[in-house]
Amino acid sequence: MSITVEGGIATVIVSDPDRGCSLDIPGLDHAATVLREDDSIRAVVLQGPEGMGFCNGGDVKAFAAADDPGAYLAEIAAPFHRFVSALRAIDAPSIAAVRGFAAGGGMSIACAATLAVGGPGTRFVPAYPTIGFSTDGGLSWTLPRIVGQRQAARIILANQILDSSEAQRLGLLGDVTGTDEDVVPHARAMAEKLAAASRTATTEILRLLRASDASALGEHLDAEAAAIARTAGSADGREGVAAFLAKRPPRFEP
Image 1: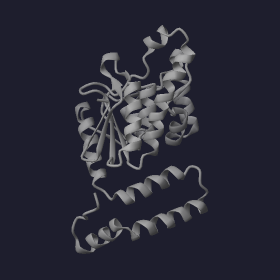
Image 2 (image 1 turned 90 degrees about the horizontal axis):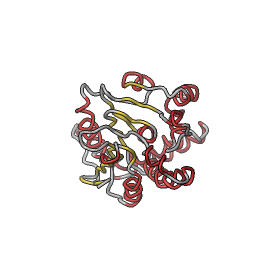
Image 3 (image 1 turned 60 degrees about the horizontal axis):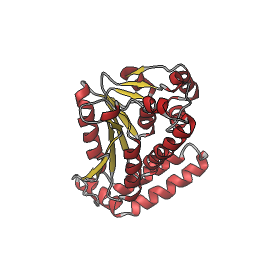
Image 4 (image 1 turned 90 degrees about the vertical axis):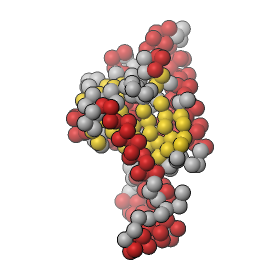
């Protein structure tokens, strides 16, 4: 299965182990539907197949075999982009567990996630210019928002390979684990913590963060004022304050 949901945590296997860890396009299309429709999801973990790397991007052999490469790429970009859109729209944080390589479309997915975890062997590789392609999966939109326009241009155009230290310095990775084997467990532990947080607060915070790029400060301050009023008046808000004063862990609504 490309996606499973258990205990409020959706796990998405983004690549196909039988095709060199290339993008699992049918699986991602199915995952997009689940992300849009399953209201029980409170956190999302993105990972490669068990014991394997994150994602090596598109299936270049399939590109070469296509009678009309342009039409073929347009055909597979549509479901890929549905997945990225669903990932960005869901009112739940997503964590990319980037073990090994995140190349091409794999890098696009990692950059579309809310958070990302890597290990010593993590490598980000744009890859697109190497085969004469432009970007997809939102990379030319997400990467500048993470590292800035000039850094994004340098990374993509020069096809710069980023190791885990450089990726963390630039903001592509948050945590870097001591071993590559710890990447997925660490991401899952983060997801469990986020899934246990107030869903009301998480939803409002994610919406504010996503709106921040397009809103003026005054407009955004108004949005923050409205959001904090909603959260303060919610059951979770009342429980959070009561728990703080009682010096006990909060018991937020499931």
